[in-house]
Length: 240
Image (tube, rainbow, N blue to C red):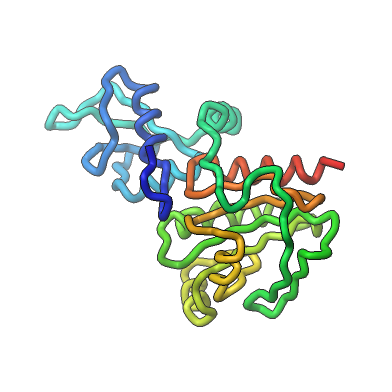
């Protein structure tokens, strides 16, 4: 179903599924769709698409139509229980060929752009959360706010390490971060690491458990990508 690995977003599939489940008419949501929020405002395509991608919002049909007879859709925020049920219905995010679950992880030694040194060849009892990305990758940028929330959730746990391997150079990343804060530890000029692990699609995520095994690996951005990363971190922390 997906022909291109680079810059994949599964949002359109999810939106279509939501529209089919919640409306009697099998209309496909697109840029011309009228989507109104619970505040009564009509949301532009770029805005509601980004909200849907967080997995915190959903869309359903309304019993009203526009002047042109087109149906309106309602954008609404999901409760915690609704989000859990929604994620359970979604297929597991696309697996990564570079990080296959259950494989041994060959660690590496690296210094991030702030001078912090990491040696994952000898690190024990650490859960490593990797993200391979670059600035001009739209889904890579779209998911950053959610990744920042993930970092905040584990900020008091020293056994969880977040590391973002960027293909870009330090100067460009610093300019990018002025507008788009990103709270992972960022390694600049990381193409050599991407090549080392055979990463060819972006974003690529991997969770390495405390026994240096790949717990989870995925490419692209699905609505439940962050949920699976969090789930994999928690399971890795609980495992012996």
